[in-house]
Amino acid sequence: MAKNIVYFDLETQKSADEVGGWSKISSMGMSLGVTFSTARGDYRIYGEPHVNDLLADLQRADLVVGFNILRFDYEVLHGYTTFDLSQLPTLDMLVDLANTLQHRLSLDSIATATFGVEKTAEGLQAIQWFKEGKLLEIAEYCCYDVKLTKMVHEHGVRHRQLHYSNRFGKKLTVPVKWEV
Image 1 (cartoon, rainbow, N blue to C red):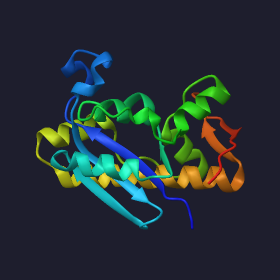
Image 2 (image 1 turned 90 degrees about the vertical axis):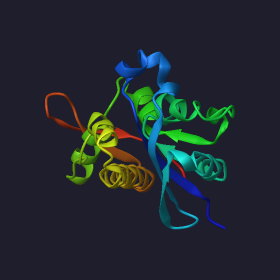
Image 3 (image 1 turned 180 degrees about the vertical axis):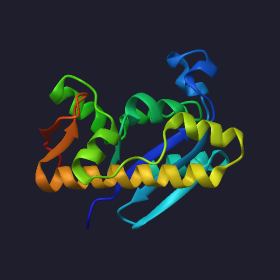
Image 4 (image 1 turned 30 degrees about the horizontal axis):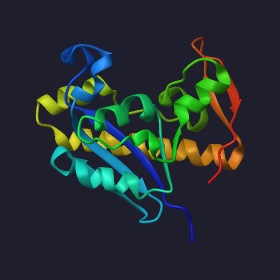
């Protein structure tokens, strides 16, 4: 039986500035969370009233894959649960790549250099959409980020490397040792 890999991303209701800084991520509130489960073969969108369903989805995963989820997404969710999400089997691609390169990369930099596609928005835009009640826009954006996360992970597993653009626009390659 194949592993249940759950790709995950969430957006917040508030920015770091609105809650008193990056040390208070758990106070930002989740606007929407999105998963893609390889076992189900589908995307699921969770609003704040369904955060417990999202937490259960993550806990059922054989592996949770995301980008900056240890430092950000899990911390947001810690505002809703006493369960230590860092105990889940997790591949945080940002952390893994930063350990190899000794600097951080953006998901957009990898997606652009590897696939020629860009993210459709950024987190502060999603916060503005939340304030305007535009949940559909947040869902589309967050689903797209989960799709990019899945594409990056699968490419890394298959080709054992990823491409990224450095701050000068030069395309570089980084090796990865990800397993399924």
